[in-house]
Image 1 (tube, rainbow, N blue to C red):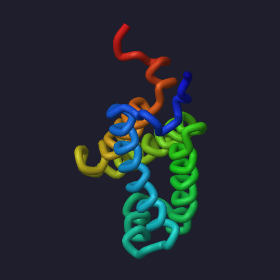
Image 2 (cartoon, helix red, strand yellow):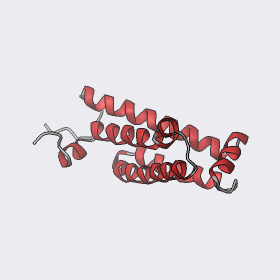
Image 3 (cartoon, rainbow, N blue to C red):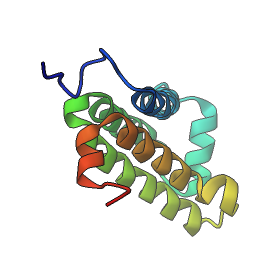
Length: 135
């Protein structure tokens, strides 16, 4: 009997840990996207502080939402992780440009990226086979 890699039956603690990490990243990014899409004042103020036109907040919200959707679906999760990595890189560059605090702002994209890739690595056996931690 062969079990598909994406079935929840018999999922190991490693897979569940990956799902939890991925879920945290997804939840945070859904909240971030929603705040940008509903155009709350704090987002507008932040856009101004970062040097972006206010009307781009919704565009960024959609970009985040697309990345989250790709990341959440097992079939497109690797593409979603790559998409989100690019997004995090842009956020890091933006915060470097405006000289934001290092550990709380600049590196926040690194933290999210590490969580996203760790979650995907733990929940996807194909990724673990492609990049084994041990030889």
